[in-house]
Image (spheres, rainbow, N blue to C red):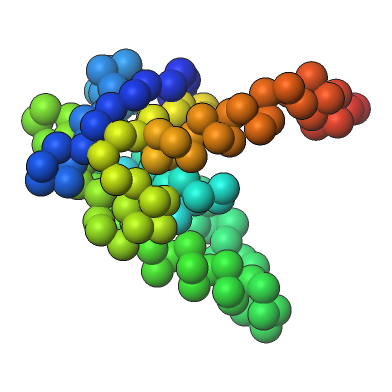
Length: 145
């Protein structure tokens, strides 16, 4: 659904504009509402509402008697915010999420199929450069049948 990577900057009001291709996908799929939260690897996750509800159901089923499940759910859901893009496709990223992802001004917005990731530009290129050489090796391990 969401594919590609796009460089953007945060405006003086703390907003980013979703890439035009992502806005078009949202329009075609009647997506009006997103949820943003702390992601993994120091990025932010942005889910369409339906996908968020699907992920939420999985995580709600984790046993609250297990400490790691409680910790994960606390960090994941306490960081969550409902987001409705404005008419220009801009979204406001809460300050605590910008701090978590170490976002200052420049971001890379990455489509990862069912979600969008928002990265501080330097963190994205650090991640990419650290892992791109291992892509084939990782694909062999992940794609084992």
